[in-house]
Length: 410
Image (cartoon, rainbow, N blue to C red; front, side, top):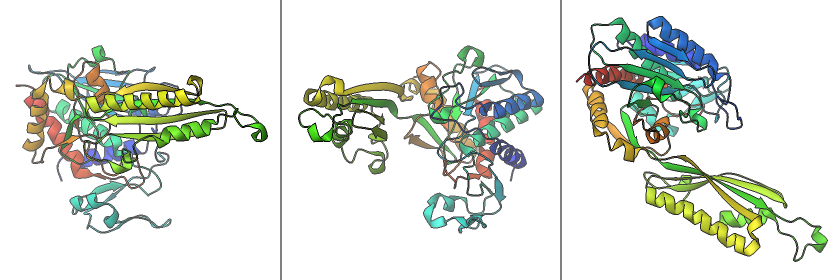
C-alpha cells in the first residue's frame, strides 16, 4: 500500500457510480448526455486540485486541464475516456473492495448467487494477496476507463501539491464515446497544446501498445423483389437469400472466435432482412496494412460476383473507414516508447508490448498528427459483470506517470 492507495480507490469508486454508458444507437454528441455528469465532476475536481486552463466543452463533452511547467522539457499529454461500454449495464453500479484476495471463487452477489469462479478467470491468479474493486455482479464496473481517470487525477493532484518536483507542461484531456467509435474526434489539438500524448486504456498492468488493428465497417445493402410465392418462379429475388449467400463466401475460420495474436478477421455484427430489403453490418480488422486492404478488396469481389448473378441493384457494398494502426506514426517518434518503457520498468513493473486487437483513441489521434501510444489502465474483464480493478495497478500507474513526467524534463 502506498500513499496513493486511498486516493485511487476512492476516486474509482466515486466515478464508477456515475452512469456514463455510451450508445451505438444515437446520433447526438455525445451519444448519451449522462456523460456530462462525470465531465462536470472532473472539471470541478481539476479546478479544486489547482489545475490551470480547465475547460469543459459544453458542446462536445471534452474536459481539458493543464499543469503549467516549472522547468523546461517536452510536454506530456495524457488522455482517458469517460464513457463505459454498452455491452453490459452501467446503471446503479455498486463497487466494493475485496481485501487480500485469497485465490478462490469470489461471491459477488449472495442474494442472486452470482459468483466469479477462479477456474473461469485465469487472470485472478495474478492478484492473490491484493485488494480488488469489484461489482455486485449485475453491472459492469467501469474501470474501463475510469481506473485511468483515477490514476491521472491522483497524479495531477500530487504533482500540483509538490511544486518542488520539476516537470514540463502536463496536458490532460478526458473524452466521450470511445466505446462506440468516438475515438476522440472532437479533441481540440490546439487547446490540448501537447504535440504528443499517451492514452491510458487496456487491461493488465505494465502492458503498452504502439500498434493496433486497421479497421473498417462494411455495410451490405440488399434489395430484393417480392411476389406471391405461388407465382414467384423466375421473378422473386429474396434479399435474405442474397445476404446469406454473401455471408457464406466469407472464410469460415477468419472470424474473431478462431483468431488471435496478429491474425485479422471479418465479423458479422448484424444481418436484418426481409424478402424485399435487408442490410448486413460487419467489421473488418487486420494489423497488416496489405492484408487489411486485401480483406476490403475481397468483399468488393464477392459483391461484384453477386451483382453479376442477381443484378447490380440487388446488392451494394459500402465500406466506412474506422481507424488505422498507430504503428506507422509511432515509429517516427521512437523516444516515446523508450520513455514509456523506462518509466514502467523504473517502477518495478515488467513492461510488455502488445499488438492490440482493437483500437484506441490513440489510433485516430495518431492519424490526426498527435502520436499517441497506449499505457494499460490495469483493469480486468472489461465490458462485463465480472470486471474488476486491482487497486495496486492504479497505484503503480500513478508512479509510472510521475516517472514519465520526470523523464520528459530531460
